[in-house]
Length: 304
Ligand code: A3P
Image (tube, rainbow, N blue to C red; front, side):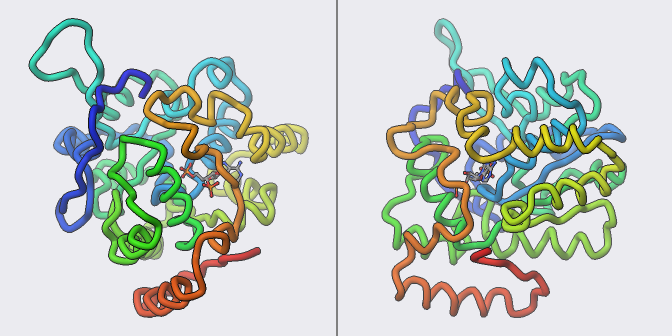
């Protein structure tokens, strides 16, 4: 991420019915044939659901506090499975070498590996299902997700140009975002959970409401039992303010992020959408939301 050879913003295109950019499809065959290890833990999310937050919690629960957490950025400790980024190379060459999430993971000598993905459920390599891998899915309400996504895309050329807010909101409703429709994503993984018992489905809003309670649920799912003292340390380390000031999680090391436009650890709140949606946008969004979620049993909170 610190040496990416990205000169212009990528285009969105239809990939098996989902909007994607080539950064997440160029290594598709290798990704599909990826071999999981029995103890791998997958963190799956639609972008901006609190992936980094839960990833850090998972690391602290599994490994405690480590030297790596103070020297290696979290996106290098927990690679993104589908990533396929060109890397800057010294000298002249026709095509730049590529950073591949799968290669990085194959070379990770850590156990368990924590693996990050944003792909919709139908894109997950079959090895995860065959190995009955433990999967943690984090979902966040649509309104705060779209606001957070908008600010992220303003700050990075790794994503398409967001354009203005009102067009962006319309695109989000239509699912024309990197990794596709939020509606399909949260529902797809939710449906999978009904038949595959190794998915722990969590909500960003619940984490905000009571981080300790959600950590307890995660521990139950993962079969971990930290002491009360260890749990207190984790809660402290993953608080928004501490993470915001931690250079190994706040993305300050990513050269392709323009921090004059936004921060990665931006607000960390439920309900910031109220500062972005006009009354008309909100009404229109609610109407579309009701329609798109009419067959879903998923319930989100837009305030806590
Ligand atoms: P905002 O942009 O609304 O502030 P992801 O890691 O999936 O990209 O999600 C990023 C979002 O999670 C950002 O939301 C970020 O601030 C929020 N976040 C990250 N760590 C958090 C924490 N410890 N507490 C609350 N929110 C957190």
